[in-house]
Each structure stands twice: as C-alpha cells, then as structure tokens.
Image 1 (tube, rainbow, N blue to C red):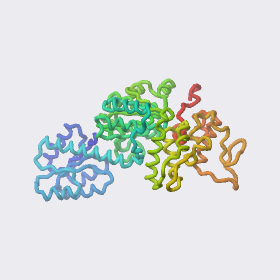
Image 2 (image 1 turned 180 degrees about the vertical axis):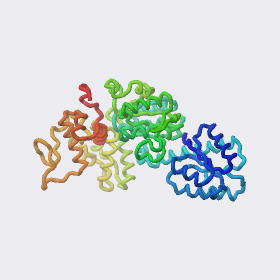
Image 3 (image 1 turned 90 degrees about the vertical axis):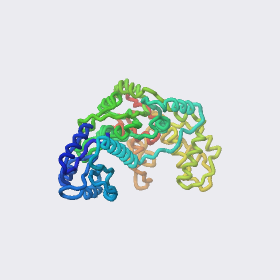
Image 4 (image 1 turned 30 degrees about the vertical axis):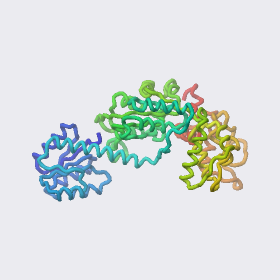
Length: 483
C-alpha cells in the first residue's frame, strides 16, 4: 500500500479528531498537528506519504507550507482542507503544490475518493521513478525467428501468458529469457500494470532483502528514508526475478513466504504488507541440481516451477541465425550511423557453422562490432565478424579446453603470469582481468569456488564475469566434492 503514514494539520480540534479517527479506521498510521511548526517537526523526524493541510492556521497560511514542501527531496502528497469554496483559492493551492482539495464539511465517501486517488497516483509516481532510474534498456526486439524451436516457444507463451500462474524460465545465458518474460507480460491480463525487474545476481547480498521488500527509515546505516521494495512497486502487476538461483538461503525463505502468502514486512519494519503480483523468474542454471546440492530450497523451487518454460540455445535453432544477424545489422547500422549493404555469403556460412556458446547475445555483440568496424557501404564478412581466426573467449565450452597458461603480457612465457616489460604492448585493465580469471580457473582445474578465492572475489562476481565473456553457464566442476 503506497499510502501508509499521514499527517492531519488542522487547528479545529473537532475536525482534526474526526479526520484522525476516519483515517485510523482505514488502518492508516496517523499523526496530528495544529500548527505549521508542529507539522514541520513531524516531517523532520519521519517520512510521511500524505498530509491534510488546513488553509488558515494560527502561525501562517497552509499554502506557505505547501510551497516549502516542494523544496524537499522527499515530500508527502498534500490535500488542502478549507471551508472556503472559491475557485481562486483552489487554483492558488494547486499552484502551490496541492494534490487535491476538500471543502468542509466533507463526507466519509469523499475521504475514500481522495485516498484512492492519492494511492493510485503515489503508486504510478514511484513506479515511474524506478523505471527512470533503471538504465537497462530492453533490446526492443520480439522473439525473432522461424525455426521449429522458436515457434514452439511462441505457442507456449501464447498459452501461458493469459494465465496468472508463476513461471520459471530456464535457459543458457544470452538466449533471451528476459524477452520471453516480457512477452508473457504483454500477453497477460496485467499488461497495463507495472512490470518490475530485479537482477538478483547484480545486487550485493547485503542489499538484496531491501531490494525485494524495501526498508523503513533507520533500518540500517544509510537508510535515511523509507523505501518501497520491488514487490511493492509491482503491486497489481508483474515482477521479474532475473537469475533467481543467486539468492541466498536466508532470502529464499522470505521469498517463499511471499509466494505462499503474498505478504511480507520491510527490513526494519513490523507492519505486514500484502501484495498482488504475478511472479516470473529466470535462471541460467539447472535448479534441480542446485536443489540436490542443497544450494536452493526445494519448496521454493516447487513454488517457482508451476509453469516451466525452457528457452532453446541458439545452436538448436541455427535456421534463425541469418534472420537475427540481418535484424541486428539493420538496428546497429541505424544506431551507429554506419551504412552497411548486407552480409556476405561467406559471413553467413561462418555464422551458420559457429557453435554459439554465448547464444543470441554473442551474435548480437559480433554483429555490432562488425558494423562499427565496417567501411561505409561495405559488407559484413567472415573477417569483420571475427569468425575466421580460431575461437573467441566465449567459445571455451568448459575450462578443460582452455589454454594451459594465459600470460598477462602479449608474449609467451612459462610459469606464473607476469605484467610484462617496457618493450611489450600494454594491455587494458579489462584484458588483464579477463586473463587473470582464466588463468585462475586453469590453475584450479575449473573449480570456480577456489578460483574466486584465489582472485579474492565472490563466486557471484566470478559468474557474472564469465557471463560477460560468453562462457556457458556450466555448473562448478567441484560440485561432487562440495563447496
């Protein structure tokens, strides 16, 4: 519920007490004040969602407080309460920042209408603020292709989309799981409601609970104001839990409760919040194997896996490669202002013979690079697509096939990697990082957990880096001996 805490600023005690009681009967947390100074003190100590403001007060005009509220980074919606029904006063209050206007005496039904308008507006405002902060842009593409696997996927989406059931989308990195989730959302009855995404692998473990459920002011260091979590923002709509396998066991237990009861408490709060959301989760790992290794709760897996949707890897739908490549070529030509005639036959043959361990994302990256490096009016060929000179980093199917030693300088050395000397080319930090990661994995024979310890990074960070390099998301090779 977006509106929770309300201030009633009214100097008439009878009206103030009546309005307070009306709001408390509707289960709002209410604080009252009879002067502007008292209201300002309340606002300095806590975060409020709504304030009812009388126009004429002992220490000033309510419109003065409205103007002062507009200077605050976090401010409540304001509803003006007055006995003066003049049009000019209503216009002045709206210009000062009022959200709505109530004329005394007002009925219980009028209060209900005002509260409903405020809650709807607050929800829209907070969702829009979240979407504005989200820098990730959807690719803007539908599920492109004409192969049998992609047609089966489309048919499944058409069937599952209109339902309200929880969906678990499984597939390798880069296959387009988020596109499937968005397609399900557009097909469903909540298409006009919020679609809120949370990448579980990208959020630090100590903040993931706050991202899910929000927090109260003062819940932890740096929590200066109350904040709604993703589940609240998605109320009435759909929430996408991307890479759900990366959630810690502690948060898994709380997530299970949300799926079962559709309720939770914010971090640092005691009030139970009920939400109505459709949950769509994605993972690039085999959750069944994670359950067997007791890394993922079995009961949570069952709750998520109501309707499983597997997304085929690109190597299983090679007929779609030319279609996708052409679409990417057109899009990146427009984006980068480079006119490209097309893709040469040898380029198409190279694309069709590639194994695509990085799936559609790898194809997209290769085509974008080729377009950027292409001559004006040129053709994309095998060389520009970088498919003619051996495997790219993303083509290592597993770490047993990786080079025995990946030195940190451009020349060949034996033994431990070194930074190189003055007469050797200087590598970028990104390349040094990539080589260090593959060297650590070779040193540990593909054991990601041990490699992460050698590199002094978390296993989550290592997985994210490997996803960037296009390495297939094979489970850790040390699963048999435990982590």
